[in-house]
Image 1: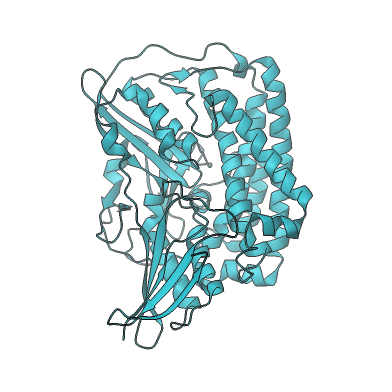
Image 2 (image 1 turned 180 degrees about the vertical axis):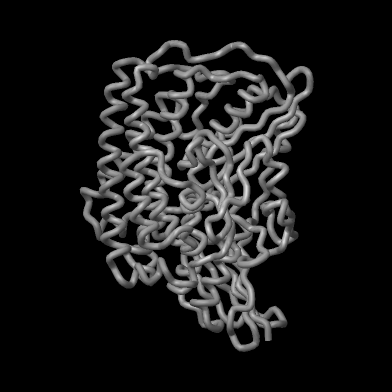
Length: 487
């Protein structure tokens, strides 16, 4: 008898997806799929538009990662117009981008993931959210989370005209600079963000690493995967969010490839499967080898843990200490999927320290914020590290600068196949037979939630009202059990 468990919709992520779990005759998990059930048509409906409109269009793909789309698009325009931004413009862009990293990483950790560790994986679903988290850690900490995120979003709003969906990027520069008066409150925000990032890391270590039941989850084989890793590094192979080369290492940490983002089509293959709308990626020089990890796999992971795995260190001193502590505890490269959360907080600290450095740079308030020496070459590729992984925008135009081709290779595409495998491993560990409890399914959801996937739409629900349905069917399609909430 073949049974099937359907988790639809899955929760606490951006977008709309579902999980299908297939049981064998003995009630064990035979297979599992993480499916994206919505169509993204952005590339197609941008065709025919003036290419300079793209940095204003693409931030509207979603409300979670608009800054990375704006930044990748702006860099693609730099490339397509053969222009280098001025030094001041580069500082303004990176200030914007590091502020984004802080607010994005903190919303994922505190709002989406921390409730699993602090409130409990099997706690009542109505309390497993930010409200339940605040009840556990105290309202003062909750206020600090909200305050730090708000102040960093104020920086994005200042530089990009609004947050979310900023529009500050122009080919060769930015739309506005920074005044000396603005520098002072930016510096104060950066200082306070460094302090809060250190606090968040201490909280993580106190609640997760020092608590045996949570540490057991982090190191559990159910949350391990043997893949390659990919991410941007700077000229010293340190973690970079805005610029650099793409580096790939294997599961032992040995460098497999290092290339300019403009060469991505030589290294990254895209693959279509009939059961999902998302295009899966793989290492082209290995070749598509299907949904498998271990020897022979061509799959790689991106995002916070992958970035730390591919790099030789962090770009700032305090983050470097935390980087050393994490790998001393887990070994390097770390294959522990739940360690994405640890890496995420280390990255927030690097972003905050980088903001301090930028705020102290005399060049920041220069009025030379745009290079207008534009020369259309008709093809441009821009790449940044979105909070959840490598993001590439590839544009082509006609002689008038009208878009003829657009390919957006987003982070969740890189992680989609590994997420399927992670869900399958967690399901095999925690689901036994058709009598499935909600807490077990939450532990399966934790496997994909660690990646912070973004499915590019706006599926939101109030805390405690997350819809979830699990349907178990026999080989004839008859329902033998159903677990639901909020439906």
